[in-house]
Image (cartoon, rainbow, N blue to C red):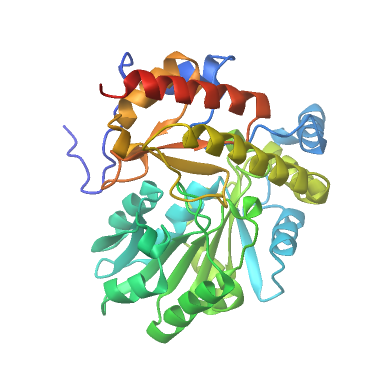
Length: 385
């Protein structure tokens, strides 16, 4: 028998009634009536230039050929233009932000290093870091005292001589907290002064009211993880990028596994997405902001429940139900019975998972209204008497 690796991911616990996590996801994926609020995906795109570009790519048979291994030059240039970064930077196209994260951890971290992350957060980052570093310091940030985010002061408190990487998810999955310009500058100063790297995951940046790139202030010490999954509505197409200075990208290229390039159809859609972005990005941002208000009104009806971060700067938020006595697992199970898919807190936190559920709201308004009505009803049903 093959022994489990020391960094193997913890087995995902499927909801009641499902034998495996894969069985569960197949169920929710196949159910066309399911309201999809559990994976921060974006369902607000019409049949647009993005879809048309991918259909054309298929119709002309371009998918029969391998693409350039580092991504089509046009797409690489569009990514840099979207971020407003100049010739000192380069983009490497990847099969989604998750692959980008893995490659960055693999390239930057050595066995004697440690990395700093936060809890709550995107736990796969901790898992990847643990594969290549000696240890991962996951800093608790579920508190109003730090505005529910990793702060420069918390980083300094948790750094030591072996710290090599600081992970910034900005805006933060699952809470939607984000950073001011001054905070990003402070992180940049820390990176430069201590010769460490900032891993700036900006997957949700286009939903934010304002956003600032660490790469602008610490270019030699920042690796930016870029994704088409969320604002472009392309989660199932698995396409993203790593953006950094040319020397960092050259280093990452040395450990790339996917030598034959990223999905041709996905790249065609990504090119069309960035070319057409100005036409639809404000509409999607405004619709998600409006949907947040509906959720906020529903949460306010439930005594003891609250939103740790409001408004969210992402397309997701957490609803804290701890003081109501309702178990987040029970809440997600009951909502699933009503064809509403949300996530219980343990999916994004090892410490605070019993306090909240996480849900995304880049879905049609009428579906958010259905969630709001059912949330109030289910919470009253589950509340201990």
